[in-house]
Length: 122
Image 1 (cartoon, rainbow, N blue to C red):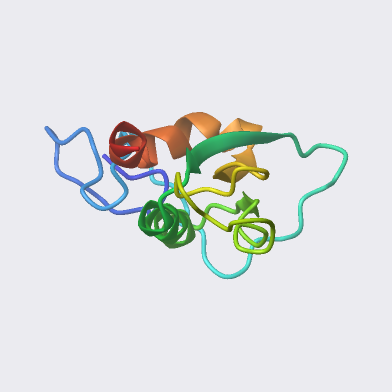
Image 2 (cartoon, helix red, strand yellow):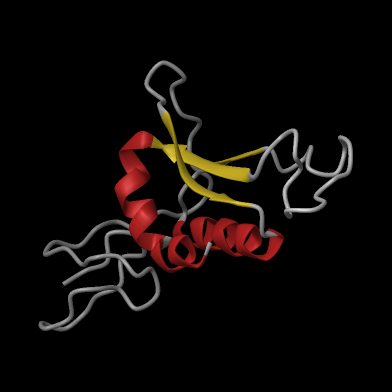
């Protein structure tokens, strides 16, 4: 059994990667290393995988995606403190809303599995 994200090998009986927290597959997968090639803009379809107003959860989610080698786009983080009252009172700017992490729509199911604990927290 192998992790489809990091490539770690597991004995029979295991069904989830301890590090990536994704279901294992039967065949080995080449782990992603180095920078990802730029996507073809014509084929790229973005989907929101994570939304939060909590800066700590946002940093943790970004870290998990980076560790797994999953490319993502952060939407709304740079403008949180620029407009109006910043993040007061709800933790997100009232005009811009919470921060969103977007991924390629094809990766959405795997990313939601990876971020499942964070999704339940927020």
